[in-house]
Image 1 (spheres, rainbow, N blue to C red):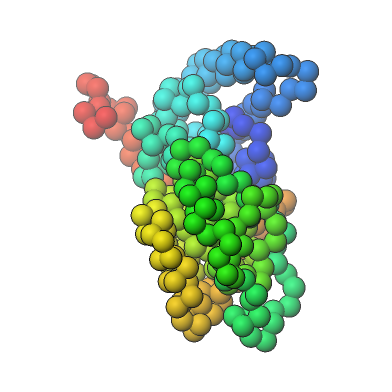
Image 2 (cartoon, rainbow, N blue to C red):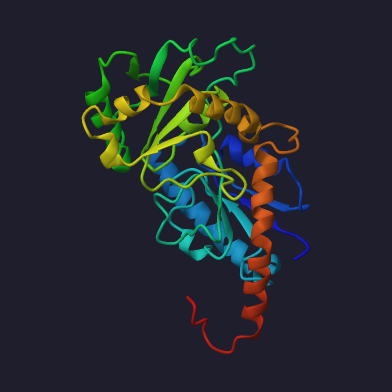
Length: 311
């Protein structure tokens, strides 16, 4: 497989930064009808539906698609609604996803790549205090939307439980800098992941992850247990349990996690031009790991005389 085709189906910063990498000399097809200033919502949805259908037909008729049945294509579907009506028709391709919350029935970890959100806060680059733990004036911090759908309903439950707790900030507001907090809370959003995790990482704040079905970027190369704390939803909703666990967390262990965060935070920076081991480079490294499985699937498909019995 000498060339991978990349299809951009949704306008988002992470997708366009992926284009900058060029590691495989990829061929790009860009499509973004969802940002049209002169169309109403209804007209926009109808236009998008027809445009995507046309694009799928063009794509599947192309020689590049036919040579592998789309297996050597990479399709960023990072937004939860990207390509939603036609994912099953192009599911042989490698998807670049934020998580599997809305596509778990067609997507899978063995085939697809999990990419980070673009962080919403500025990266922390200031000098560090002499005692980073004692300088933190807040135990646990969350600032974001508390009313979400699906798995994100836990945000409202946590808000009710944690609001007013000493040394805890849990606010309905836009994201803001998360530095100088000991722990930063990452509950699920509308899907298992959200940008809060990556805001915490670039702020050098130890993430507290409450999301039962989350999948994490670059996990074949990064052990998140080295710098994050995980609670199940049931654990987090036990009155007093989460805060008591954090209050009793050993300082030495926290400092070790904090040091680890500082050493890996560059992996979550989208940059142009991309740099070695930044988010763009890491995504392409993950794609590269999928290439042997793609080759296997392509070679098998060429010799099968009956439908593939593994599907």
